[in-house]
Image 1 (cartoon, rainbow, N blue to C red):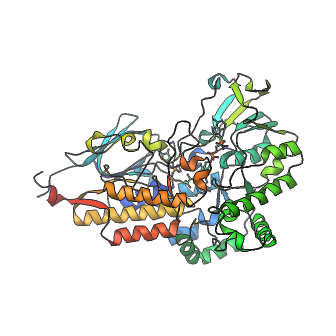
Image 2 (image 1 turned 60 degrees about the horizontal axis):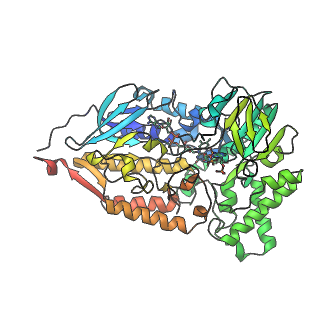
Image 3 (image 1 turned 180 degrees about the vertical axis):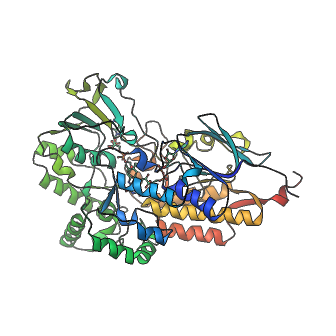
Length: 541
Ligand code: FAD
Ligand code: NA7
């Protein structure tokens, strides 16, 4: 006989971005569970709700920066540019929420502050900042892996007299037209902002710590026939994406860079430079840019030669030229280096000339100059992957906080579950795939849905990975990451961007195809690595 337990809802889904939205649909509309969604923001969309800075857009091409789970949805939604601007992605996600009637079960403006597992009832209790408390049998976290802002503690920060904003919290009422604007950070976000802001601001000062390799995106209008062709080919397109490495909608190269002549390498680099897209340049040119130092150096040298050609002022060109490995998340943009040829754009390399403080008037650098500003933009990125987990009072078995489990860095089994946290799942949790994210999100949501559906049918009360399975997955991810050059470059991918953060492997880097195969094997072997306890087994306990 089962132990009686009554939960307020079957499942709670935290976050209403790409992940949370689809998870809610899967659990409520397809599995028939009662579900409550919680979202901190004032609207749905996650990344695309918060990142409203000028220039914000996806750098995955639009035809694969969307869901693929419903063929009708694929057919009915159009696009007009090669990359989707932030308002376009947001409008799409709003449409999805309405199309599947999800809005009524998402509590907006509701931050989850805690989630605790009760071993007596095998239920989760989720608490919110506005004082609500709700119990459920399952919790799925769709907290986002690039969603917790990194706001550096620069002296004088709070005394700035102008507007100081982070790109992940861009206010609707902020118009930078004609203003003196400063930006700290030149990652994916910073470079997007710089190109757009240069067109709008009266003067733009770029505070650059580390120069980046940026290739063209090839952005531009997409005509009707291209959209129609993609729609006709969607079956083949998504089949390719799901079986690829990075899932960006192009074929990865199988050719090693050093197996061809220097002329041929340059031809291939030029061809892909002309096509545009950062992931294409890193993975579509040659097979080993991210793994072989010589191949990597060849790609880096090609990009450096482009900077020298494009940037007119030799000192600015020198400061913009990276000297380290080409092994961070690859970036692309339209006209990034060209922007620095403008008279109203100034580059301040802050490794050589550090920021000393933020004054009420602007930013004072070590050379004594005060860069006077009306607006200071922090494009300083995120406490990626585990940031939003640690921000909650998240407690599993024995009341142990997630931080106690993650002292050496965040870990998981398969990027979606954690030992000691029964019936809790993560979308894009630590050591999930490093890809174009919507197809990986779909993969995880569908797999979690499959596991929960199976548990419901079999009367399984708790499902939880074993510590051994989790250790095995961590070892696999570490081994794969160490075969690449990514760990050798300081970036958010390994947590190197946050002062004091433990450097750790946080991604499965063997690709979405291999990941999907692994998930299929685990499910096929009766959810190998998970301990599943049925109601009958707990009877009388
Ligand atoms: P998110 O969209 O981040 O949603 C997570 C949600 O959880 C947020 O709304 C957050 O408010 C909510 N949340 C977190 N904690 C709590 C809490 N405690 N209580 C309640 N709610 C909470 N990826 C790509 O693959 N291609 C791209 O081109 C690309 N471009 C990007 C551009 C920018 C500017 C940024 C920031 C990211 C980009 N990404 C891109 C990554 C992007 O985050 C993912 O593609 C995708 O949007 C992630 O969806 P998600 O639902 O997992 O997370
Ligand atoms: P990133 O890629 O982490 O870039 C952040 C930028 O901010 C980068 O240039 C950093 O320099 C710089 N930064 C961070 N902290 C500081 C401090 N304290 N002082 C000066 N400069 C600083 O974040 P993004 O938002 O651009 O992109 C993250 C992902 O989101 C991206 O890959 C997309 O997937 C979307 P650094 O290089 O560390 O020297």
